[in-house]
Image (cartoon, rainbow, N blue to C red):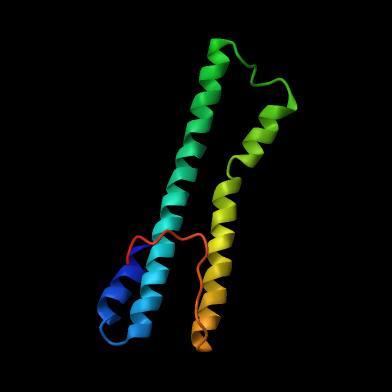
Amino acid sequence: MLIVPLLLWSWKKNQSLRIDTQGRQVLNFQITMTLLLFAAACLLMALPVGLVAMDEAGWTHLQSGPGFMLLTISAPLPLILIGIYCTILGVLNATRALSDKPIYYPLSIPFVK
């Protein structure tokens, strides 16, 4: 997910200031979303380990209560929401770039300046 924008930006950045600016914005967005996806995946993997540890310690009972079902259903929700967000912003900014309008990626950390 991160390799293609990095390769395209590094190959074409010297051809135009606009390509350089948009490439930096896309690259910053992709780095930010990759970090968020990695954090969400780590939380998703840590959830079962934590639940089993809590069950063995006697703090919870995995089979009782609707909380466990709600937790297991909502655990992959951050991954799904990040995927939808990336898809929507990618399509919107691609159409904006093709129609010569400025692109905008909110919630991206400026790693590449």
